[in-house]
Length: 356
Image (cartoon, rainbow, N blue to C red; front, side, top):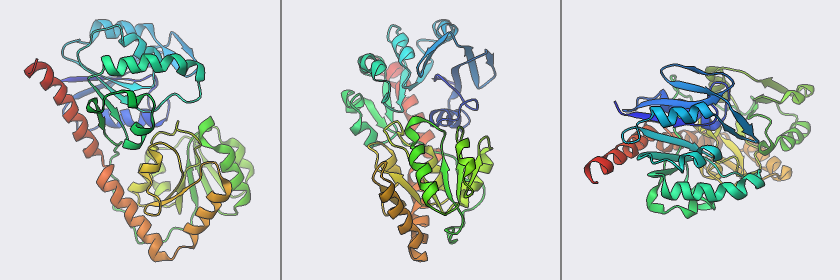
């Protein structure tokens, strides 16, 4: 079985971001390839699915491991193995730019937005790397490809759009329930781009019940209408999503490139209220079809959209639920993503071995 090494700077379950979830989903899928994660942690360990190398240093959100670089040089077959790199990861892109690996795929998850100093140098490294070293670049939505200054520099013929897919629920989804008496659900950690100040303003001014899932949100304990969860299982999270009135996203920048939580919401037929971001977020949630889109960072517009969804006739709310589930089935099922990824892996082997 052909080997695919996934390279990313952090890994699940020790960090819970969208990229980590995406990689974990791939390596546990029914792919026709043998997948393994190469990543970095505080201590080295390995098993059949992951090899974790000890950190050498980190700067800002970047991280480097000398032992990982040695492994790449000595253990990965430059002719036959596939490296599937997940970016942004500046130091790894810089390192691989000097090597002659024949099969490199890059999933470009997001631009670097906040770290202006890093981005000044990074954009030139990554443009060179994507154009000269990557056999194929994957973007998770057409909208993100069109709005990224870096991705637009890569020839369209070398880019594939493959939306992130997730496994379906084991139990059937009852879409005929009116869930609006339940709670508003937010999922996300206390990161600068998650719009936590906007969320807190809404919680203070709305008497409705809220459930928040994520780390660093302890300040919400003071609100009587909020229930917090931090470390919960995927099963518990799916259960909380399936009973929510709506899923709320308050992110404020293109750092929120896609939003796997939105897909998890669509899977359960839960309407979404999300910001008008210049990213995949505004493609995943379809305005007035699977929920509403509000002006980014605008509390008043957010409250208007929230009021709208709560005051809809039940038949229209139910339409939102059905359309959400349909959108998941047509665009975001796991088997669709894995089939498309496997096609790219095969395509690279075919080009190299049959059409030299």
